[in-house]
Image 1 (cartoon, helix red, strand yellow):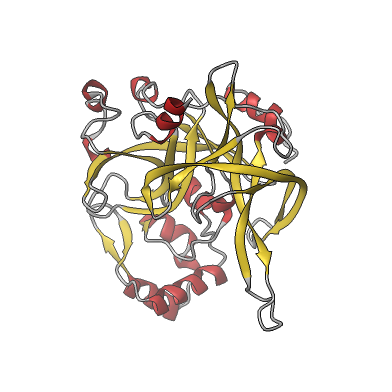
Image 2 (cartoon, rainbow, N blue to C red):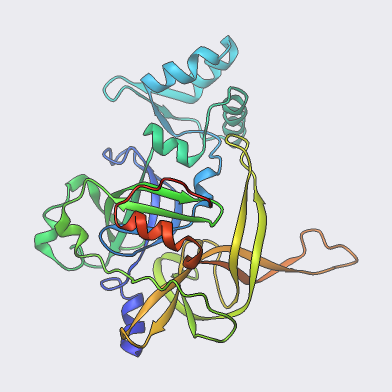
Length: 345
C-alpha cells in the first residue's frame, strides 16, 4: 500500500495534473498562462475538476482576434473609449490580433469597467467558446520526455513543449475541451482533444468510487499540489467529520446566479488554497488500488470574534468536498460518450 501512495505523488505515475487557460498557445513569445486549477485523469482522456472557476469574470483580455473585436466590442464604444482601448492594446498585422501592452492596474480596472458596461462576457467559459484562450493540461517532468517515453514525445508539436526555468522542469501542453459542467455540484468534465491516442494512453488514471461515506467509515486521502508550489504533489490524510445538504449561492451577473447544492462532505485535514479540483481518495481492497471518491470544492471556515468583531475573522481548518455520487448517472453517461438529455444539477 505504501508503494501505491508513492506512485500517487510520483510525476511519472500520478493522475494529478493541472488545467490552465492559455492565450496564444502556438506563439511562445506571446503565450500567457491563466486560471490554474487541479484536475485528475479518470481514463480515456477524460479529466475531472471543479466548475466554479469557469464562470468567474476575468475583467479584461490579454489578446483578442481582430474579427471578434470589430464585431462585439468596437461598435459599442464611444470615441473616448475607442481611443483608450487602442492606447492599451496594439494590433499585429501578421496575426490580426490585438495584444495588451499596458499592464497598469488603474488602466486594467478601467478596461474591465468598459467591458462590463458594454456587456462583453469576460468569463473563462465564454473565452473558451470564443477562442480567446483555450484550456490545456500542463504536464511537468524533470526529464525531457513525456512520461519517460521518447517515442511518444516525438508525437508532440514542438510549440507544445518548453522548459520552465523557474521550476527547472520540462512542460508539455495538451489541449482539452469542456464536455460538461455540473455547476450545482461544482464538478466539470473535460476531454483531451486533437491529441494522438498514444499520448493519452501514457497518462495514469484513477478509477471512480461512487459510494457515499460517513464519518470514519473509510480512510480518506487528499491528493493535491505541494503546499508552496504547483510543481509538486502532496498526499495527506483527510477525515470526513460530517455530511451536509449544501446550499450556497454563486454570483454570476451574465447568466444569472446559481446554487451550490446537494450532498457534501465536511472534511478536516490540510488543504492549500489553490487545491480546488483535487481528488479525495480511498483504498479499494478488492482492486488493490486507490480510487477517487470526491473532489475538493470549497474552503469552510470557523468564525472567530476578535474584539467583538466577527467580520473577516475566519480560520480555514475544514474543506467542503463534493462526492462523485451526486452526479453518478449523468457522469457515467458522459464517460461512455453519451449526450445528456436533461441535467438536473
